[in-house]
Length: 212
Image (cartoon, rainbow, N blue to C red; front, side, top):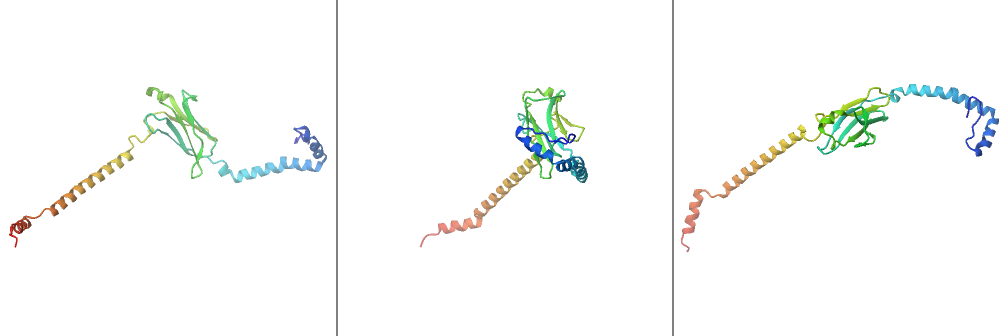
């Protein structure tokens, strides 16, 4: 529909007959023009104002670097962002990387926010060049990007995690206590089974008595 010329555009030859039929209906043309130029914009403004708090909602995520083992890729993980119109990538010296990079999908969180990750294979990168790499997160509607530098000091991993050390220490203590308890139990049972001197002498006398 061309609102300026108040005519219909037929994209295919088969639609020409319908075009001519609709253009003869001047009342329908006036109604459509009024809806698209007056009523529709008014409704849009109204609903946008009513839903502004949700439509314009933005949540900045927490971004962290994760690595399972020294030979695993470094995963740049962002979680808790909203809306889901976001991109994340690895860069080197300010230029986006495409090789040795694996992009993950945007996934929903239980609270309605979203998460995503992008992995970087660092096995071929010398450690002294790590400071050239950056993980960049961009969220729609937010001007400032979130940037985190590739640094082994900020990578979260199971290696050296204090929680795992605490659990390991607790397990060692539990095993040690169990071992000590078992030794005490064996010692007590051994004492119970060993006859006392008095009972030993009585047994000897009974054995030495002549049989009738």
